[in-house]
Length: 485
Image (cartoon, rainbow, N blue to C red; front, side):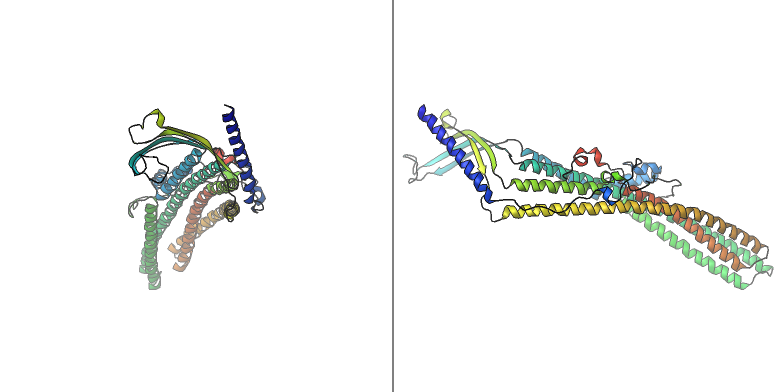
C-alpha cells in the first residue's frame, strides 16, 4: 500500500515538474511588441450631433401608398439572387457559431475495428502468437475536453458571433439596395411618363396651331413662311414623342429586370409621382446614424471580429491544456472480445505549447493586428461616407424645395405669357414667332417642373437609404453593446 502511494506521489511530482518546465519554455515564443495603431472614429468627431426620431421603417415603401410600387418591390425581394446569397452567408455564419461553440464543451467519440494481422515473431508477442495470424479487435468510447485556460476557444466563438452580425447587416443592406433601386427606377418611369404626356400634348397643341395658321393664310393674315414653320414644328414634336416613348420602354425593361421578369412584362404598367414629402428631414446629421445604417453595422462588426481574432492569436502563445479519457475493449481474436478481462481504461491530462516555431506565431499575430487596422480604417471610411451622404441629401432636398417654389412662379408666368400671345395672335395683333417663343418657354417650364417633382421624390428615397432604410442594430445586443474600444 505504501509502495503504491509512493509511486503515485512520484508520478504527481513528475507531472508538476513537467508542467512548470513547459510553461517556462513557453517564454521562448513571445507576443511582446506586437500591436495595432489605428483608432476608431466617433460620429460626433465628424459632425454628427442631432437627435432624430423619425427614422424610416423597415418597409418604408408602404408609406408611399402606391400598391403598384409595393407589389414590384415584393417581387424584387422574393428569391432575388443577391438576397439569397446574403441569406446563405448568414446561414454559414450561424453554422460557424455552432462549430465554435462546440469547442467549449467536452467531445465524445466512438470507434471500433477488427483487423486480421500476422504478428511478428521478433516483436513482443509471445508464442504461440508470434508468427501467427490473429484477429485483433478494438472498440472504445473516447472523451476529451479542451480547458481553454487562455480563452482561445471563447475568442473564436466571439469572432463567429461578430461574423454573424456582419452577415445580418449585409443581408439588410442587400434588401435596402434592391428596394431603393426599384423605387428610384419606378419614379424615373413616372417622370418619363409625365414627359411623354407633355410631348403628346405639345404635338396636339402644334397641330392645333398649324390649323390656325392655315385659316389665317386663307384670310391673308399669314404667309407660307408661317405654314412651313408650323409643319416643321409638327415633325419636331413627333421626334420628341418617339424619344419619350423609347425612354419609357427602356425604363420599363429595366424595372422588369430588377423584379426578375421577362423584358416586356411591364409594358402596360403605369407610374405616377407622389404629391407629398415621403421622409421627414433631419435638422442636422443624426448622432444615432451609427446604429441605423447596415454598412456601418457591418463595418463595426468586422472590427469586433478582427479584435477577437487577435485574442485567439495571442492565446496560441500559451499552453493548451486538455483532459482526455477512454474506455473500451481490446483482444486477440473475437472469442474473448466481450469478456470483462478485455476491458481497457485510460485517462489523463495533455499539455501542448509552442517552444520554437521559427516566428510562425508572431507572424500570425502581426497579421491579425494588421487585419484590425484595416477593419478600423474601413469603418472610419464608411462612417465618413455615411455622414457626408446624409449631409448631401439634406442639402439637396433643401435646395430643391426652394427651386420648386421659384419654378411654380416661373411656370405660372410662362402660362400667362403663352395665353396672351395666343389671344393676340388669333386677333391678328402679333405674328406667329411670338407664339412660338412663348410656347417654347412654356414647354421648358413644364418640363423643368416635372423634373423637379421627380427629383424631390428621388432625393427622399435617397435620404431613406442614407438613413438606413429601417435597419436598427440596437435591436441586436451583440451589435449595439459590443465595443472593443
